[in-house]
Image (cartoon, rainbow, N blue to C red; front, side, top):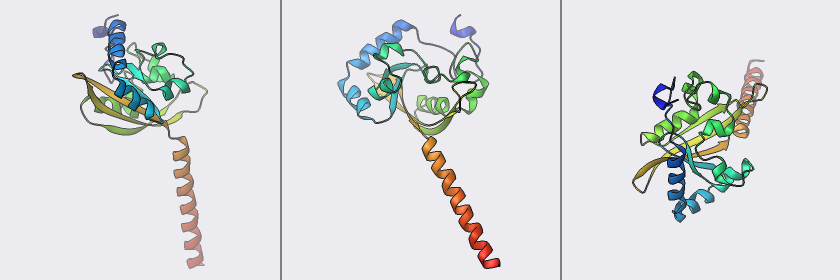
Length: 184
């Protein structure tokens, strides 16, 4: 099925062919500075091409997915790698379903593709019976050898979100106790 016939309800459904993905990967592998910077980052990081497909990643990302080689994930989109249930709703995969319109990850990537770095949150459902993953994603534009890419950094935001909820609950309880003590 050609990209032109793929239906999309949000981001482009177009995909880069495997040969081009491999060529981009090999070119990026030659940039030792890029590899060192990616691997110095503590979060999971991937370099995406113009079609939101993985062409490079850091060792932290490979480790969390228990992957031996990056070639196992080359060409995948982030939602496909993470197992997002919405990534299989349309023939164009990750980023193309109606649900993807509110996805912080794909929207941050689209923003980076237009030249603006963006940090957003993403609640990713990875299975029908599973709890959603709370993620904070940052996508930034980068030009390497005259070609535009996006760097996507992903970190688990569940602990941070729980902390914020507990803080709100605590301050709400303190405020209520204070009001009761003044009015009583």
